[in-house]
Image (cartoon, rainbow, N blue to C red; front, side, top):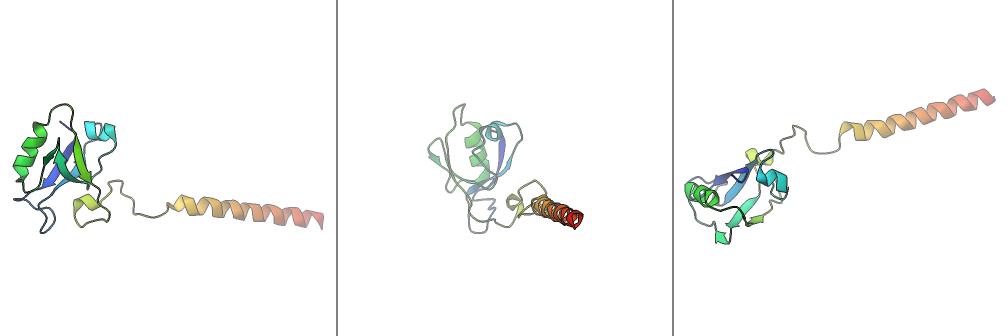
Length: 124
């Protein structure tokens, strides 16, 4: 296979009033994962030049299964997170800076301040 799962279609809308096909999961070590360009949450607009608009889910799946070895995908990146499972990045971490990015420089500054204070006291 191509190494990813899809959701959506005219009969299984993933997002209300949107029958588009979306990447729901990229399988680790699959073709899409190894290529690195496709991301979870991407909207797939076309496969090998064939428009996916107004397709039932099973017809879209069949189109992917019969895509062949050289597959060309036209996709649209999702700019903002949506509600639902594709909004989760999969690493279990919330967004923002990791705690270490704040603590390590702070501890380094504190250590430098203590060292300067001790050196200053020795000279007195």
